[in-house]
Length: 300
Image (cartoon, rainbow, N blue to C red; front, side, top):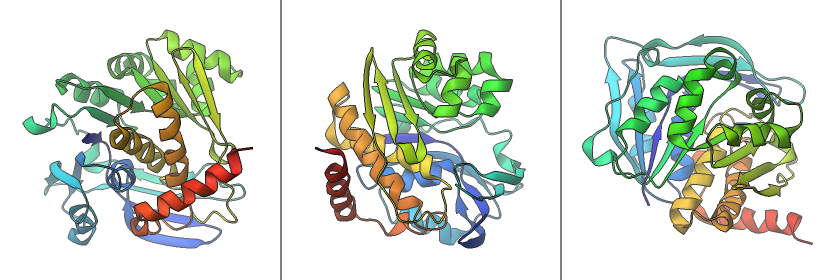
């Protein structure tokens, strides 16, 4: 099944204890698309400025990624983000954010994008997320990502977007904030009461949790010897999750459990290099081999 992703393409500058990269390809839609395209066709919706390098577009064109929904604004500049990581590297310190052309982006989807069965709404303004939802004609599963900025400052708009999508992915701190409880299970129950069917909680090195219709599944993370750069790991996780759902054509609880395994594996590749450097080299064979490794760690 094809997958639509609506989100940011960015030019990132990243610093970690392992080194740094200046003006490298980034953005939620970039990480998601590269990961999900290993499984099925991706239809990318996003916006770039005149400074976006053609060499970076090659990374998309050489994969199963349809760029029919990508707009280039020659009068503006691409979204830029710079950040640094220290210590446990479980969160970035943002040094600078320049939204540029992303600030006013309200996409009009190409006609052949509107009947895409699987939809990922990457973290952005919830009004934009709801706008994308309203253009879909036959979605089977839509998954929305968000962050504390929208939870704290635009909660009512976020509720509307979540209800339109019906399913949400977020990290454990965001889940507690959205559900207004330090107890994750209580928080998830409150999120479900908003009108959400499926909730995926990313817990970094502690794994991930899946909640669907009163059922719960937990999965450990894959042990890694080192983490070079966590940037984009969450969006890669989502790409692996949605990609596996597309490839398996199974939206049941069992299908989502399997998809969570693939999500965990895909995220483990991303953190091994700066930006998209490691992920761009991953093959399906690499995924299958690491999936076996994860199963070895999780099966008694």
